Length: 380
Image 1: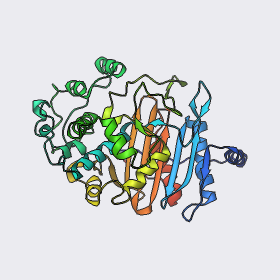
Image 2 (image 1 turned 90 degrees about the vertical axis):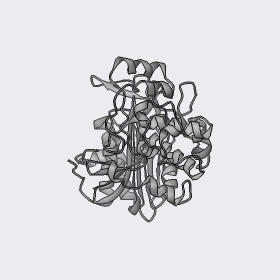
Image 3 (image 1 turned 120 degrees about the horizontal axis):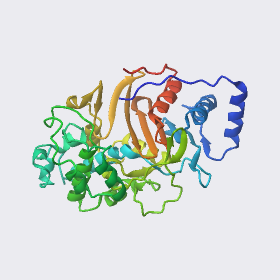
Image 4 (image 1 turned 120 degrees about the vertical axis):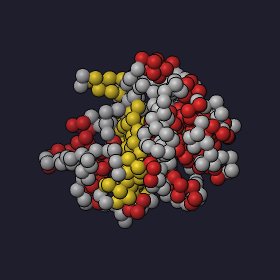
């Protein structure tokens, strides 16, 4: 699902020295060298990312955690070009589809409290779902095996609602007359619509808005004070502006009302908050029970795609470096994101960018390649 990328090497010693001088003088970086990290490694990672800034327009923030500790974090490039505000580890980015991990966790929390069961039909909680959707289960929505279609993202109608906004019910109605991609449980197809339905179930069973449930049950308990559900009316300090490249020139990203991605992609966060999230999912009972974590990270056979599996809001892969990897990527107008966790190696790599052409998962692969001292994976 995520193609390989050839590593780029900084060959100029003079350039490398200048990069290090810049790093030492900046206040937007933090180096922590514990038993699993060292200064030379941090310098290599920073040199590589700085080269990506110069040659591939990267702007954003990067965090590497090893053995339960942050060993590297730094912001790169501008958070806002009009004010010349710089990105830092506390800059807030839209994380797009990384939101799905949080939506899945909300469903599991509700199951732990006896308010639903993932094997229930979604229509038990949302009886007004389209007729063809009545048989699909919550589990199938979580694993993208429901067959629920996505809208035509390039169509005029969807472009309109991206600007005007829509309720979850309107988003479902947008594709309600389309046939299912396949009979539920018999295939796999990544669907944002399915995760919007999950958000509707969260609201119906909890009696709270999706944003309120997230805040009360995840962000506040985990002290993720720089994360939330994005709205156009909120004034957020240290919010990054989103950018695109048009004809090779930097431009403001197209506007999107964040009600349209909803529970499939509507959260903003920082690399530091996402590391707190990563650590919570790495510990039984920190947020979810051992049973819930097992469900979240199970390789369900029906949810296999190109040799990888989709759990609950997470891709489970064994294709990179021969190691178990949990990851997810995200992209929306002006932003791209990635979180990668190698659980057996206690390594976490988070890359957030406020330029939507960036492929942060490829940057994460490069950093992991250096840390493991292994060649870059070649995926077919």
